[in-house]
Length: 189
Image (tube, helix red, strand yellow):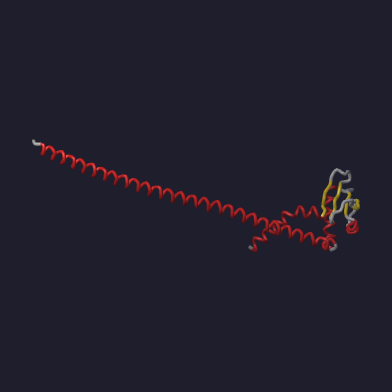
């Protein structure tokens, strides 16, 4: 074998190895490109899912906050309505205290107090109400404290006490009045 032939073989081997390296490099580049594209697609998919989840969480949080605020506004409006209604009720009490229904109520309260505290109890009423009572077996005294109407009473021995003043009755009925007003609000809604 001559030098020329050896050089041809070397050149041929070199070209074959260069082609093999180029083909291998190109295949490796294609593989890397495919992996990169797959990773980019996976990243985009995960980013989209995360963004959707974040948006859902934000929407849920904002809806919850809005519902809480709406409930607060509604409750405040209901409370204002109830307070206005109670103020309106208090505004009509003076007229009620002058009417015949009040006289009946006052005597009914006196009967209740007498049943609870026994004969000999003392009924304390406002000066204007003393003549409205029709009682026997009890003492009627002018109250030393100011209250709208009704009565307060103590047992003969002073150990028991009841408060049937108009203020106390309204206070006790406030919850039931509030429930009725709420029912009315719901009917109108």
